[in-house]
Length: 384
Image 1 (cartoon, rainbow, N blue to C red):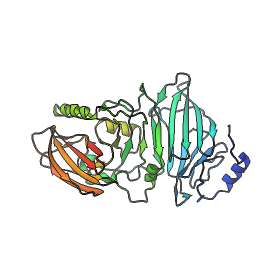
Image 2: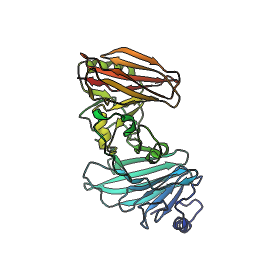
Image 3: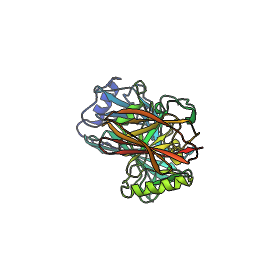
Image 4: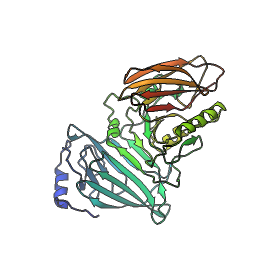
């Protein structure tokens, strides 16, 4: 274990950690402590476990497993209770990582880098946690030692158990279900049902970005919409693709009219996918590949009745809910490649509406625009 000291000695840090209360005040800088965590209800109780404190949150890493096992959000200047059971790189369901070596590679009041060395199928992999004082988040990345091959499978498990929800086609209030926001990997402009976002890809940096603002969604005692009790994880943070979006959308609409099950990917916006079970790697990949998602450059667009990528019966109603912190400007409905309805919205931050599902058509799509001209696009709702 290597600590780069910036004022406090290791002994003093350990004493402070042992004496800390369950409602500890957040510092103005980054601090690193070794030993049992101060986080209320935390699982990091080992002598070699590491806790990182920032002005926005604190998290603890288990030296035995290498997983982030505790995380507390700052509220009114003090840390709250532990919100997570585990956040870790998961190569695939059922695969286990071997023994861990943990090092603090960099430690200052402004930046902390922690590296884990573990074994995967006989090969050494290294995972990093990077925190900057001025950015309210944790950046995670995992590579194979020697080859530099990067991996992209992360899973977040909350302390709260999974919520049992009905199937999306029967859900009257889908905006109260679990949605996960992610910035997809570079060049993933179109997704197919067979795509697996966890598989290794070439041509871009693969990392995860966990932001403190969206981590606060884990606090289930707060009234929240569209993500209740669910953390939002930018699963893959890469250089975005910004050019050619409109032509790509036009091409997709033509393919939808032929009945092809291909869907909007990340481009330069965020893709919000329906992840009711909370497994951010497997569920996100499955939902995005099946079109249970919408692409946003600003506002949010949640289905209330039939989920995007789902199938609606003619003469039923497709209801949606729009949200925007800056205010909404207008909304549109597209049907088989043509705009057939629209609404002007006078700056409201919340708007719910619906339209009848017409017979003898293939698909319908919702589009919403905020007052800054930023748009969100649903994937198609297929018409039976």
